[in-house]
Each structure stands twice: as structure tokens, then as C-alpha cells.
Image (spheres, each protein chain N blue to C red):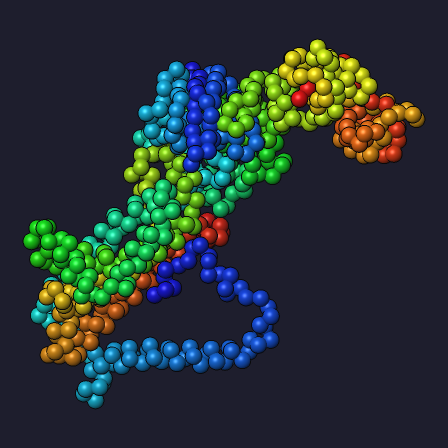
Length: 289
Length: 346
């Protein structure tokens, strides 16, 4: 996942540009590196392979693979409603995250640069706080809000926005640091753009890689989060998967694989989208469009 | 198009207790180009940003066409601005950059395109209309920025050191273009620069600033020939500082064996002073028993700048016609002859 949170500032590149002194020692680590890579790949892919094989009935019947569990998934009780709930929550989470964070971060960079460390600290807090504390804290904080929100799965949007703050902060911060924000904003202002227009037409298009990265991670989080939804006794896709798993392991595993592949698909789409029209692209490629 | 005037009245602004502007008064006549010139930190950029509405003032007024614009936000001031750093929107091509201001003013796509095309032609970049920032050179980017600023027919054009990031040849070329465009369009323009040559060559009026205040505001030739203060004298062009003795009545000064009239008598008390004299007002006449020794001769085409040393160790710069410089090679001796024009003493 870290590959998607691109590093437009290029802060990581000096590390990869190590001096040539290590060249003579290169060959040996390369073998070690390959072995390590294979080990990690195995660690990562073997369970995945096993899971997929399991969902295709490979372990059960000795009668070849079948897609029946996958095709039957849609007809499972609660599958569609819970998937839709999770998708709605994901969309809501990303929307609220961006509406809150893009203007805040732009303002922070423009007007309150000395506050960046403090805000970063606050935004990283959800990483350190246990899920139970966050879940109940948010319930308490929004106690006075209408029951329609606090008593339904909509409350999860508020929960996930908090959970997604750390990487949203990081991603937007990197994106905003990589452009001459102050000059662009002033240019837009002097050309007659209001603040909202400046934000929408100048800031957003120039940090959209960062927005896309943050958005996709937020969506992946919202689609896969189990603990808090379970704690709050709400029905989401992961919760449903867990319940389904108590009756039928194949269905649960298939659902889990589905959500995993959905997230991957999203990630790939976004990295494709982000790579599509960045400013660093060589001129020739752009011309051919 | 009737261009408005721009007036700054007792403008002040402090950053963390340090005054960037300290009661700045300046008037820019309609349709003229005023250069705000000064060393870095003199407040010239702050003044420009206050005119643009990108910075607020702590006191004083900015009047455009006689109207105080303090309450008008930057996006309603109708001013075109070109920045020192490249400020084109990287997500838009040159044409859309130029059209941005028109879009903000609600022009439809076809009209925007047409007008942007005209402006790009004006700055000689018609073939580059669909290029993006990273495909253009620095000079091209600043041209597009200029076209973008002009596209909306702003009331005032503000240039914040637009040429300082460019290399020397492009810089000279573009400043001539800016000047000819400005004259042609008759647009009131404020041009901030720290480059005195740039200021002298393009401005109708040069406003020399120092520490947040105006030192002198006059036509380039006037600022050069009759600097109001010693700071202006030494900031604009090159000045010799020669030791001299001021007479008791303060009207003449003894310098290098001559008695010269003093400008603004009474500004200094009698005694030892420094006399400011331009290199072109110093002549060196080759003479075997001359008091000055030539140290260096720098050929500059029509003139040669000679560096000579007086017996007391003072260095003197003198501009002599190159044709007359043959006898003034390093090591040669010469007599110092100063023009009789009134001199400045500090």
C-alpha cells in the first residue's frame, strides 16, 4: 500500500542514490535480497492462493474447481444489503474526509505553517488510540446528534474519518509541499478567483495525486474495517462476512477475497489515474493523446 | 481605455515588530510605468503586494483612480500581477492559463479561446498555446504569465521582479517587450526590481526605496544626475567616494587638489567629508609626474573604466573614451582632473 502513497517531494530518493562505494559489495546482498523477497512473497501469496483455491472448492471435493461459491455469493442472505452499506460508508467517508481535510490542509500550508507539526501530531493520534476508545469516544462526542445518524451505520463514517486522518494528513501534506502553493493561490486570487474557486480550480487539480491516494486508502479502510463496526453492533460487509463464516467458511472466505480484490482494483485504478497526468511526465507522451 | 492613477499614502506595515513599510508615499500617474527600486528588504515587494491586496497594510491608504481600495479583496481589485517565481498553473496549458482570468469573469469558452489566442500572439507565443508549464523555458513561462495578467484588461499591472529568475539575454529582451507593450496599451504599471539598470531603462519614474521609505522618486535621468540623497547616489550607478575638506562656509570642497562647488551647501559641517563623484566626471590625463597610478583598465566597448590609486591609497574609477585609454595602461601615471559640476558631500 505504501507504493500508492507516492512521494512527490522526492524525499526518499537520496536514500536510493547511495554513493558508489558499496558497488563491490553489491553482488552478495543481491542474492540475499532475492531470497528475502521470495520468502516475503511466499508469506504473502501462499495464504492468498490457499484462500482462493478454497473458495473455488479445490480442497473439498476432489472433483475440480468450480465458481459456484462465487456466483452464489449474490444470493446469500444479506450479501447485497451489507455490501451496499459498506460501499455507502466508504463513499461517505472519502467525501467527508476530503471536504474536511483538503481546505484545512491548504489553509494550514498557506496561513498557519507553524501549526503543521501540532496538527500532524493530532492527526496521527488515531494510530495510537485503541479502537474501543475511538469507537466510544466518537459515540460520546456525537451524543447530541440525531438518532438517525448516531444509531445507524452512518456513525461509522464519522469513526472512519477519524481512523483515516493519519494517512490523509501525510498524503495531502506531501502533495501540498510539492507545489508552489502560495504563488499559485495568489496568482488565482489576483486573476479574480474567489477562495472556493481557487481551491477547486487551482489547489485540487494540482494535488489530485495526493487526494487520490488519500481517498483510496480511506475507501479501503472503510470497506475492510471490522472491529469498530462489530463493537457498535452495526451491520457492514466485514461484519456480515464474519457472521457468514460461522455457518459457511467458503462463503466467508469468498466474501473476504472479494473485498480484497475490490480494494486492489481501486488501488490500481487510482495509481493509474495518478500516473496519467502528472506534471513530471515527459512532453512526448502527453502530445500523443 | 482610461487608466487610473495609483497613490500610496503614508503606507505602513510591520512584520513582527520590524517595519517593512514606514510611511511610504508614492504616486503613479495614469498610464505610466513606475519602477520601485531598492535593495532587498527595503519594502518594495511588500508595497506591491499591498497594492494587489495580497497583503494588508497597518496604516495608510492605497488609492486607485482616487478610490481607497482597502476594503476590496484581491480577487475584486482587477489588477494583473506577474510574480517573481513561476506562477503558471501546472494543470493547465498556456492557453487555459491565459484564459483563467476570463473564465473567472464568466466569459464563454469560445470568446476565452479567442482572447487567449490574441494575447499569446501579443507575447509571441502563438505556437506554444497547448504547452504545459514544464514544456516551456523560464522566459516563455513569464511571457505567458504576462499574457495572463493582461488578458483581463486589468486597471493596473503589477510586476514583482518578473525577470530576476531569467538569464541575462532573455531578461534584457523581455524587459524591452514589457516596456513596449506597456506603452502601447497605456496601462498603469508598477514594476518592482532590485536591478537599477532594469529600472533606469524601462521606467517613466523611478522610486528608490530604502528601509520602507521613499528616498527619491523622479525620472530615470533625474535620479541618476541629481540623486536626492547619498544613498540614491551610491545605489544608482557607480560612485567614487573621495576624501575632501569642506570649507568653512560649506559652499566649496577641497578634493584632489581642486576646489569644487557643493550641492546643497550647509548639509554638512566644515571639515573632513567624503565627496561623491561619478566615474564619467573624473578624467585622467596621462602625465609622467601625475599623482595617480593606474592599477587596472577594463575595456567596455566605447569607454574604458580605469581604476587608479591616489597617493593616499584611495581608489578612483574613471570612465575614459576607449580611444584615449591607450596611454592609461596599468602602472602608468596620470593627473586627476575633476569636472567643475557641483558635487555631493557626505
